[in-house]
Length: 500
Length: 134
Image 1 (cartoon, chains in turn brown, purple):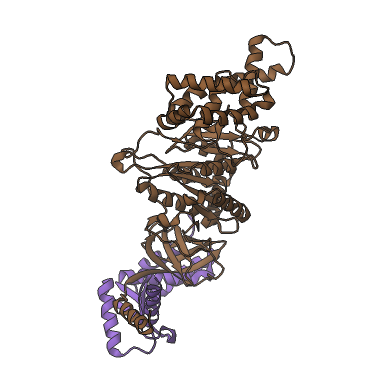
Image 2: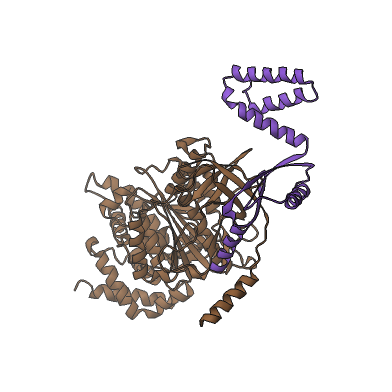
């Protein structure tokens, strides 16, 4: 562009610009501390309206009192001082959304923090929005394939479901979430990962891992780090779900992970106490249930008339010493449609993912399992339950009757097979083949320590020799009788080869 | 006993003094000050005055405006602004407090209560900056 051209363009732009003087509502900062400010004036302000401070900082009005307003400051509050002017913007807090967010890392306000330039937004969405109503919803009937055998077989998750991942620190909660994202390649599911109050080093590691796995092609990361103010941690999940809602409005399926909501509740507790709201149980404010219920209620599956699309939510809760009856865990358990319970004991026993199958449930998921998976996993849950009951007794004596022995053997093999290393999701056809062999008793005479080896070998063998079976499971979600005979033959053939 | 509230005292004082003779008003004011002392809040006498002013303004349909401009307003400008405020805020009387602020570069900034009409050149330039950056 030439110099004169540039000047001409600038002149035109200035010519088009109109500066209108409008009546604005202003207030004065009365006190400011720890990321909250008390502002006088600002009459007629709306709840959760954005305000702007003198140096361009943004705040949100949370407490509307008779002659003052309690504002949380989003960002740096060190420059704000008493007596500063505050202007109401007339807008509810919004974030930029759109296809441009995919593959990016953004903060709670939707601004890029990955150093790759500003986000190209298709629209802006309000952070707080009422969830889809009853009329627009539809039952959950499509699966989210997590690629984790223990989950897909026993605690299946459907598109539009809210499944809680709960457990102590270091039990692999985030690992399940990440594996699930990694397994969505080509599954037509956009993922939003919301990191709340996490270490920046952890986020960096995670982002690198997702990029290496090619998962950033369909993933958005929203981050409010541990070093940022509580106000941003509080906003982050709502911003994340606003980004997800944009994709749902385009008729797409979205998976959103909130990692984790315990820290979100803690951030909200901090804000509430600073705003002098009365504390309740565990010093959380009275509306901490609503805090999470209005967030998770925005996960839904919409029917065709309403444009389709879904948001599946995987909130994560960190418990202290396995206590799932604390305030926040019980709240979120009751809001969600089931939970995946992870245990430290299992983790150190080497059973990873450390899913406690007895305590974990999925209240709507089985409707979303493919038929083939339902067929093979039906007896698995029973096998495992019986195994756990007998396991405790069997440690006392060795003279067990035949049927008890059989149950124990099957159980041990099932537990062994559900073990799975991190970052290695298994596609659903392979899961079906392995579980078919297990539940139909083909693995009963394979030594427990060789189960993993057998499984890997069998999957390879079946992929080569029972292609039609795999194809049927993948495309029609169920096998035909003819193909069942084929897979039976393939397994028997493989067994004959295995161990020789 | 109900909590002592300066706002209530101001209201009571206003109602009691309205339309009374000068001596009576003096008496009532003294009584109000005694009440402040009794409650140990003499230091908040300023607040009492502030509330009293507010109540008075409201009852007499008066608004107070702060006007800042780069240079002193002319008689005509003063009058125009006064009419503008009277019209916008449906007030009968306007008490104007004028200040000069070199930083505004030009234009005027009018503040009535918590409503601001920012017609200064400074804010217009700022808006232009935001517009061009976008």
